[in-house]
Length: 262
Image (cartoon, rainbow, N blue to C red; front, side):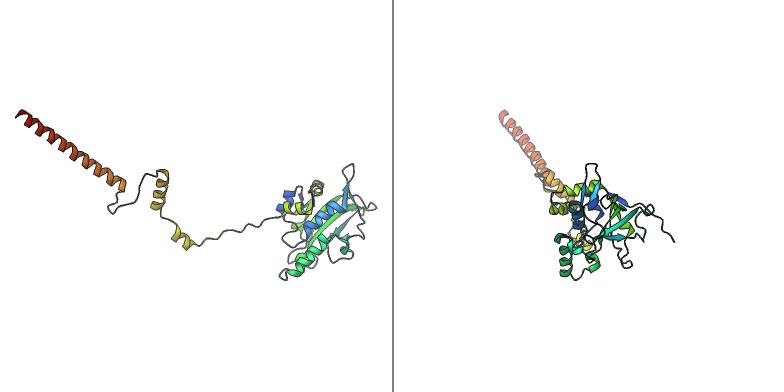
């Protein structure tokens, strides 16, 4: 059964690379490999063409890529070829910089939980015309398929790299800056204890009273047994006192008036 080919998604910006997650998580070497490729392995000429600065048939572990899984477009006859790089165990891969090769290997040796396949799964594939070892027609990033057959690449994790992204990586002001820009922070969802939440959450009446107190600091909303606030109780007492005072004043005036007539 022939699988229908779908053009790989294109990565055009640093943000695209970050969101895509290529070369992540730790301790995969894909981002460091891509940085090396952009800054040391290729150059751009005055026409904007990307030129390879090494021999893809023998340097840095480059070797022929057959595209047997059809993760990339079919080539036009015999005029073009694919080459891959990034296998840290391949012949001459030891010529890759230490920040690509030794970082991944040393970190994998420290963390026995991570399999060696996870530490050596990232690849870069270039497309070139035969007889021209300089012009890079296209650049792709890919990775080995999780749980797949030995050496099988994942079509869903294969992406075309826009030359503009290569330029951005070259302008990233160093490896550390580039890694900081592309690091994908893991978001850990907060888990709540529903029973604890029910116990600690105030009831609606208490919440409403608290809000009212904040809005009006002079208002005392402490509830008395009959259900009246202290402020309401004070208001009622004041009214009773006012009535008694008025009645007393009327009686006093009346008595004075009577005494005056006598």
